[in-house]
Image 1 (tube, rainbow, N blue to C red):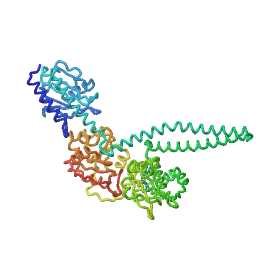
Image 2: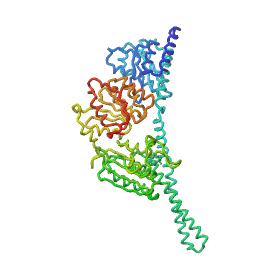
Image 3: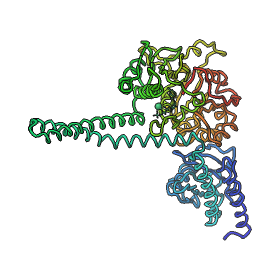
Image 4: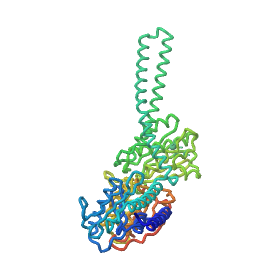
Amino acid sequence: MLPQALRLARLDVLHDLSQRLAGESVGGYFGECLDALQSGSSARVGLAFAYDERLELVADRGLPASHQPLSALLRGASTFAERCLATRKPVQSVDLRADRDGVDDAGELLALGTPSVLAVPVLDFRAAVAAFVLLFPSPADVDAETITFARSVANLAALRSQRERRTEIKPTTEEQEQTAHMVSLGLLTATVAHELRGPAGALLLQQEELKRISEQLKLLDDGADPALNESVSELSELSADIGTAVTRVRETVEQLSMVSRREVAPEHVELGEVVAESLSIARPHLERRGVNLSTGFEPGCYTIARRDNLAQVVINLVLNAMDACLDTSPPEVTVRVQTAGEHVALIVEDNGPGVPAAAIPHIFKPFFTTKERGAGTGLGLKICSDVVSAHGGHIEVHERVGGGASFRALLPRARENSGLLALPIAAASRAPRSPVRHKQVLVVDDDPVFSRTIRRSLKPHDVRTCGAASEAQALLLDSRYTPDLVLCDVFLPGANGNLLHARVARQRPEVARRFVFVTGGALGKEEAAYLRASGCTTLFKPVELKSLLELLEDASPASGPPNTVKTLLQEPPSSSNRFG
Ligand SMILES: Nc1ncnc2c1ncn2[C@@H]1O[C@H](COP(=O)(O)OP(=O)(O)OP(=O)(O)O)[C@@H](O)[C@H]1O
Ligand SMILES: [Mg+2]
């Protein structure tokens, strides 16, 4: 039984800890928990292991600096952490001197003069996310009340972890909400397309059967009975109408599945060829409405792209142009493909009223439409700009000479018969400010096209890519790897870039200083505040190659003193060397 004074002291410790952990700006809260555990118990050494796909030490207290080898000691302690994470219960070894069975490197734990070990799990709902391992000098120190106290501290840590997780996944900005909207829309369209394809196919077969039966009836009766004759004609008409309606459903289903399809790999394509193919889908719509279509394709305009994605861009731009010029007489749409410096351009123009200046800032936002209710979803241009920026390009809107709108989708140009994207001319001809040294760059982004574009464009530097924060974390916490520059997307699957940065900063501050955040748009309040406080550069997508090369030139050698990073909250650039 603990003396009353010690019990009260522990209550004080818990109270104090709960106050501090509830605060807004508590960083490294596992360290705070270890402090609380040490001041409220006789643990001589405290270690905190976090578990996020793999076990890692995130804080330690009371370890003598001289103790060697540390790795063996940590392995010993992590044996206990693993056991308690597996059972989700406290694990105790009363006296390691008598019971060291199955404990790796027990000798190292004993060398500290701490034969008693207690490990308590941090349970975030039902998942064990961390463990505290405490080393005591005497078996008598670990009694039931000490275990209860350690569990209370772990519970407080768990609350804090839950809070952090909640804020991580909460959509805080318009963009995040829109992203969620788009994701659910993608899932919805895929499901709807899937559900409609079956019945539409069946209806088409049934309609053909109906047509066959009505033709047979016509042959059997041979026009002898006028009433039957009339009914058979009606049947034929009905069957033809059903055929037209079902074909429309099928076309819509195919368009829907295009929106949600992502699996086709990018390939080396001639833009004019893809555009001509895609126009075969749009042309009947234009003809039906009496819109003149003229085309002009410069040969040899190569790029690396997904064909089906490009078709979406062509169809959306052409149908928009068609809608815009229906009231002009005669309505005209022009589609051209031509080279434009280091880009290839798809230009779609119409002789309609043009895009009103006030609407221009909004037309690429999802669900913005000026069309009548039911006529437009407001997703066409959003899809176009997503596709084009995912391929490393961008879209421009101009006024057409002579009135009307001119949309230009610019994509990085590729050489003929080559898988390589051409380096933007400005970058290739730019005189380097310092002698070229092959620098190490890590790109952390879940968009493989963006990562590949950066890798190609930063040749001959050594560019590694990671699609997830956990993968990047494992790489960056490994002391054998110190990149010159870490280009880190802010919104990543699993854990956001700011969280990755915070984790790296705890263990390798020299690497954390080499981060450059990259973001596709509006940041949440928390992310924006974190990025500002981090002092790291933030670049907005589409990223200018010029900015990247400058950052790379400015990056001090990885083995030398760390970079002094400037805060550069750069507005989306208007020039052309950009990546999506
Ligand atoms: N060629 C054009 N001329 C004038 N305005 C245009 C043109 N293209 C697009 N717009 C404007 O941009 C808006 C958004 O276009 P977007 O393609 O995203 O959606 P939408 O055409 O309205 O609907 P949908 O989802 O069916 O494509 C249009 O509603 C229109 O106001
Ligand atoms: Mg549209």
